Length: 65
Image: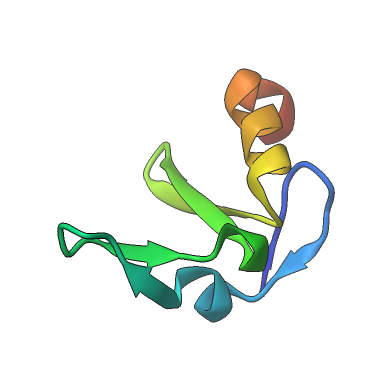
């Protein structure tokens, strides 16, 4: 399990990547309430939700130092 660097909550990586639907143009979507992720400095970082991801993106160095 991955750990959210902002709130330290454990994230089920498989659930965070699970497709929940498709857009009208055929792109896959995931449910951000099940976790979300970004690719940062060569690795995937998982978050419990959009709030923690936004906090990380605003100041990534304070969470990766």
